[in-house]
Amino acid sequence: MRFINANAKYRIRKIIVYAIYIFLLSSLQVSFPDSFGFLGQTADLMFVFVVLAGYFNGFWDGAVVGFVCGLVRDVFSPPAVVGLDGEVRVTAFLGVFTLFAAGIIGSAFFTRRMHRNIPFSIVAVIFTTTCYKVGGYLLIYGWSLLAGSASGIYSPVTFVVYSYLPQLLLNVIASVPLLLLIRFLGPVSFKKNKNNDEIIDKQGDGTWLGI
Amino acid sequence: MKKLLKSKWFISLVVLLVLAACAILSLLPGSPIKKLLKPVQSVSSPAQSIVKRAGDTLTDFWSAITDGIAIREENRALKEQIADLRYHLTQNEEAALRYEELKEALHIKDMFSNYVIYGASILSRESDEWFSTIRLNAGKADGIVLEEGNSYPVLDVEMNLVGRVIETSDTESRVLPLLHEGFAVSAKVNAVNGATFMVYGDAELKRKGLCLAKDIDPDARLEAGMEIVTSGDGGLFPEGIPIGVVVSVDNSNPLQVTATIRPYSQIGKLEDVFIMIPYVEPEENTAASTQGT
Image 1 (tube, rainbow over the protein chains, first blue to last red):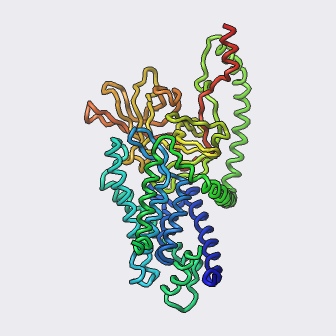
Image 2: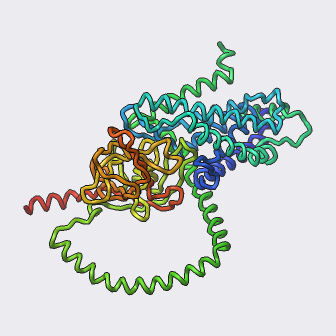
Image 3: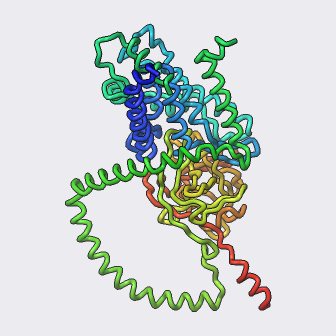
């Protein structure tokens, strides 16, 4: 009981701040994609936010925020996939799968070794974006071959030049304001003069255990 | 075993496997799994509307400041245009009356007279190149009822093809855009006895805003600059909806002639669209007309 009371303040703050950021960023991304676009790609604000939440605030933050962001993404702009019968259908839960995995990868990317330092968070975004784009490309390539839909396939060179690199650039640019937001106006307070990992143990991962 | 069940990595793996299974199950026709997202939709949609409205207001406010002088000039030119159009309107009113008389007499069918057209606004667009369906604010409650295997064309304000509705919920519809790699429509050159072929979305051409035309007869006359419209074959789209213009034709392989098409509609700039639904005569009227005959 005492544990719940001690964490109540952190927990309420965390839920409110995350809820505001999730709805604000997801709405911005799907309402004005051209404002964050370059070479046909759009800066993935939700994706970067999830990775940074995992990196700075721990495993459970990355997982929970990734799951919720994924649900919102599946509602706002789910992918349409050519089924094995040749019909195009809207899928569900691919967004949750992607962002949940991104949050977990972000939280596990040398966070302890690098003491969650700020510049290295950009490397985490680069690594996770690479995993997402390469994994997505291979999945689409394999599925298109399986479904016999050649129109979904593009060459590896096109993928690298027109899909991966612009997306990587946009995500890195987007990560600068987002990491400042999440670190200095985020759900976890890093004001106290303590080791980052101690703060995460107290305010980060531990907070969710009370819910 | 207890240790394994408590491991966060094991829990993550199980969750990922369940999510992957859900994603695959959602591809099945009439899958109920999508209903799980309904509560999220009821919370997230109003929140997104607020952000969108706030963003639009800010954009409008900024435009009002920056475009002030240009708007004054445009207003003056528009006033002149209105005067000119009024003159033409008076002349055309008479021509329209004449046309109606002839239409009755010659039983000319209006191109889209068998369709009911619903207006809708775009709620959200693609969030990245793969999560790329468009959401509209019209659903089953507005009369957009979609049966499995059916689809409705979506047009822009200039009646150009934008895409097709592939899913509807109570208050919203999802549109597969023309550039999506899963999109296909039977098309023809907008000319007398124009060649017919298929137009597809293509992942490689999507980034340039182009579509791919395939299944073209090697003897067909197809040149850059020709207008392409829907052919009406297949039954999903009525004949004559403008799609775009031919950009280039590849004749290098005579057995597989292809062409690239630049669509007229610019999805990124659209705010409002129209959904065309085939008009079904009410059963009472159908019965009455059958009895009459």
